[in-house]
Image 1 (tube, rainbow, N blue to C red):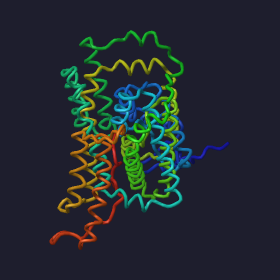
Image 2: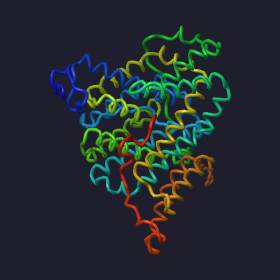
Image 3: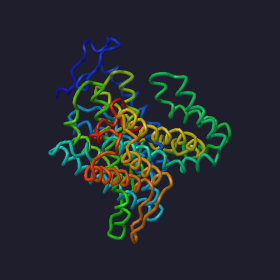
Image 4: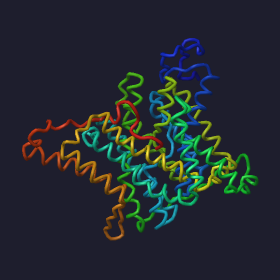
Length: 445
C-alpha cells in the first residue's frame, strides 16, 4: 500500500523559506529526525501531568502516542498535531482523586472525552459558527489564563519542599528561554528539568533504586476506571473542562492554518472528535487526558515543516517509550523541587498565553462586558472559589470557566436590550475565533 505523502523536491535540499505541507515529506531519515524533535518538544510537559496527578508516566506516554496516531487518521493526515497531556484536567483530577480515588478520576476523564467527541460530531455537521459565537476571544483568553494562574498554589507547594533546587530549575528555564533562540529556546521547560534534576542528584535528593530493577521492555501500569451513580457529582465536576478543550483545539487549528495559509476550519469537527476519542481511550487505560500541543506548533513554526509523517514518527516513538517501564521509573524519580521550579514557569506561561489571546485579537477592555468577563473568571479561578449543591462540588477552574461564558453572554444580551455600548465606547465586538491568530490557544496542554 502506497504511503499518503509525496516527496517534497528531492527530499534533501530545501531553502529556508520553503514550507513542507502536511501531505508532503522529506527523506525518511530527515523525517525521522524531525519526528524526534516533536517527541522532545512534547516530552517536557506531557510527563509533568502524570507526576502532578499521580498517574503512571509510562501509561500517559503510551496513550499520548496512540492518541496522536488516532488524531492523524481521523483528520486524514491533513492537520499536523501531537496530543499530549492536558493541564486543564489537573484540578478536577486532584479533587476527584482525593474524594473518590484514581478510578473515579478516570471516570471523569472518560465522561469529558465522550462529551468532547459528541461536540466534534455536531461541529462536523453544523459548522463552527456557533463555537465562534460561544467562545469569543475575551472568553477563550480568560479560560486559558485562569487554567494557568489557578494552578499557582500547586507550583508553590512543590517549590517550598526544596527551594534551592526549585530556584536552580527556574533559573535554568529563564536562561534557556533568553539565551537560546529557535528550537532550543522552545525546549526551555525540558532543559530546565534536566538541569534541576542534575542539581538534585548532586544534592542527594534522587533515589535510583527502582530504576535498576525496572525492565527495559514491558507493559505500563493500567488502572480500571470507576463508573457508578454514587460518583455522578464528581463526573459532572469535569464537564466545564470541555470548554477549555474546545478553545485549545480551535486555537490550534487557527494557528496551523495561518502558518500554512490554509483554511482548516472544516477539520474542526474531526479534531474535536479525535481529541475526545483519544481522551476516552486514555481514561479507559489509566492515562492522562489529551489535547493538542502548542509546543509542537512552535517546532513547526521554527522549521516550516508541517508534514504529518513526522507526527507519525513522534507518535510511534511515544508508544515505544510508554512500553519501557525503566523510562517510567526514571520520570518518577524527578523530585518535588524540580517540579516546583518548572511549573512556576510553565503555569505562568499558560496564563500569559491567555493574555496574548486578548492582545492579538484586540479585545477592548474599555468595555464593561469584557472587563467583567475576564475579571470575574480570573478571580474565581485564582482564589479557587467553591460552590456545592448537595454532593456536587465545583471549584475554581470549573467555576471560572463557566463564569467566563455566562458573564460575557449575559452582559452581551443585556447590552443589546438596553441600547448597546455606553456613550463614547466602540460598537459591540463580533465574536472572534482567532484564538489566537499567530500562536496556539495554549501551551503545554
